[in-house]
Image (cartoon, rainbow, N blue to C red; front, side):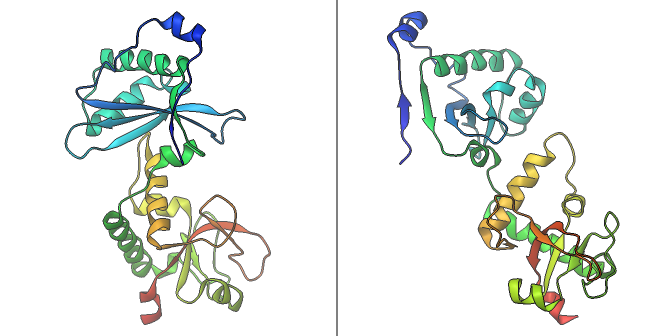
Length: 244
């Protein structure tokens, strides 16, 4: 069970003096997290900003990136909340205070906290967008048995061989990352984070098929019947493919 950790050494407590208050408490909840992140060998820190404005949305960033990516994060926070430059500077100092005084919540995986996931309603809406794109342009998603898949050209591949039918079932298509981002019209500096939110939402909603034990959500597939070369795709079952 995750618990809020308050581990204060006497040296740190005396160095900091009195408790420091959240400088943006009227508009934001600030929470420091501590755990593993794939970019670092040692456990590290992330901070979650939760707005008190309409919607209660939140964003989570690695503490080590706060100053280097200051302008990017400030813009992200103002999408759903209100944060001035001087307020973010003060908040970074507050986060440092929390870190020094050991006021944080332990989590097993910081990346999972940072990525989040799309809501169920949004996941369905975006899955239907993907389904429409596949059905409207079947030539961009050739079957494996046709041997027509071309890496960098095709948007994906239909898994119609017996091997994959036994593994995933019928009416299944693998789609490339690039094709999904284009269909979803993702762009800008935060497109990767947004994409992960969407794919995690699909996974949680059962729209994305994942059978491999690896942490990534793509599955290894041999898209050409004439080659043993493996590519990675996001796998979806689109029932309407069987009605063509």
